[in-house]
Length: 394
Image (cartoon, one colour):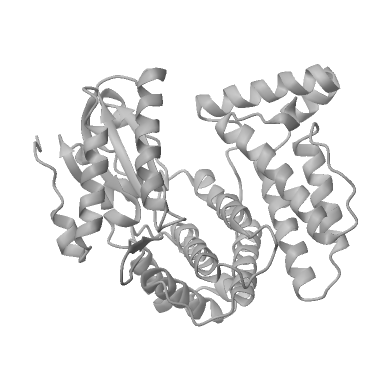
């Protein structure tokens, strides 16, 4: 039982005192509940890959702080609301200097630890997690191997990274605004190519650095790599890691954006060609099932049973991924003075299937059309993942 807060890893990784203080403050917020049995740090901070920059007067944090909690019982709605409010208030103070910063957490009840799903996130938790306070339950997290890894969950990283970048593109669609944050987001998301690629080569590694080292040493050994990625992939990954670690970039934002899109086109084509692409289309988690049922009811009420049943059986995650690719390709086409109406039309067709209640105005300009489609994608994703049904659903 760890009664005091363990922050020794901060010294090991050379984190400044301000980061230690912030993590300690957040642990103190979590500990206000008697329900907590253990607080574990995960994510980039736990593996020594936290991105931050020290200025003259302030520290800017680009990464998230991610926590995994072990509890005695399930949080009540009231308890979780209080916790979320406290974390949000603390997060708001840090975001004044660090607009990309977030506090993320997930939790499980102690007696369910051994039944955690065998997904890449839990592999990283097992390998990198740091127990900050309470019982050290990391040994209770299931071992995850190449053979029992959930590959359909692994593949979902593609659409999650596509959405993360799309969601953070500036509303004026100008790539020279807020360049540092945009370049960081692009580099951070490019790195997850390594998370996807390596398990398909029989390799599970827990950090970006080690994954990139493996790819750099083995790229020419795999014909499929060379068919779907140029040799520049090695240089792109090195550049992305350096950008994430140092928050320093020697590349134009638009060129970096093009590299991001091409890289994820490559991994999707690679998985499809090798017969390994698939997604967990039918929800495996209760919140997804509940959110889909609510969407089904809203569509049934406004469009009828036939349309709602058609929507229910759609492969929504694959359609969402196709929509995101089309939006990224449309924006790249416009930026490089190529034909963009085809990708815009494809985006519209995909959105109409995913979100039959979303009303898209016929706008004459590219920015208005593109931003309207992104709003529709956001409306669908917030409903599907978070159960937030905005005005477009009613």
